[in-house]
Length: 402
Image (cartoon, rainbow, N blue to C red):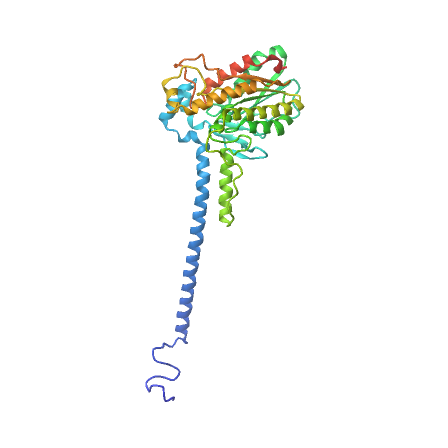
């Protein structure tokens, strides 16, 4: 026995120390180690899932905001629906079917224009494989005796708010042409809706150059102008700008970059803090019309540009409800009026062999305040769509339909 070892303590053991070399001590050590491991894994797991949840929450928030914009009709209150129902031929049917009406169609990534309608059924809109609002596919080769018309533009041309697929301007126009013109020409008129909400004349021109001109068109009708003024008011250069869908994609990509530690993409199409000068809005439209007409001339097709009506420029007697849509200071309306004057002058001054211009901004001017038309600044119900189609059929140059 060592002299330093107390007489009451066994050898190999020091004061204040517990012997753990037995079976029971080993079990305690193993349990402690497992407990530490489990706590560590739990902390790591919670951190991982918390980080994943936060990251997904940010991404989901971006997607959710876009989805809300697309399904805008679901967000309107019943009272709001009742107000705009007066712009429809059958208000009761509109209210009954209100949740099935498309307002802004979902877009899908599309070459060169970036966003265009996603093929499939979206509420009461059917989008074919060519991304056109039509139950039919665009037959290639074109059937004999068919006169093919593509109808382009933004949300009004697309038919946002139309109660049925057959109540868009393009659908009404097709029926009118086959009823009124077909007996004279012997041709079957096919009007295909190739519009997309938020598109400006640049998107239409690119679609014409790269897509529609390859689908054997006889005529392309652009029902447009409103969105060029809209984007101009928002300080956007329509020759180099992002639509709502484009900015949505940018946000999604930037969020993905952030999750991988990469910095956001550099903004290459910043918008101005002030509206684009009216004459510049018109000059950019004119450029797109010239290029679109040239592409169609190469395809031996004609081009008709129609300046669409909008609340800011109409001279119809406005109902009390329509008057309430008017902005408080009138600045937006003044900008649209001046932009429309400049666009009409530019579009009407083009002398191109396969091109014609129709100013349809005055279509509703003969109506009074009892005739409800507009649902907001830019859009109208099926009553307005029908009137537009009738005016278009009546004014369309006969030489363009043969």
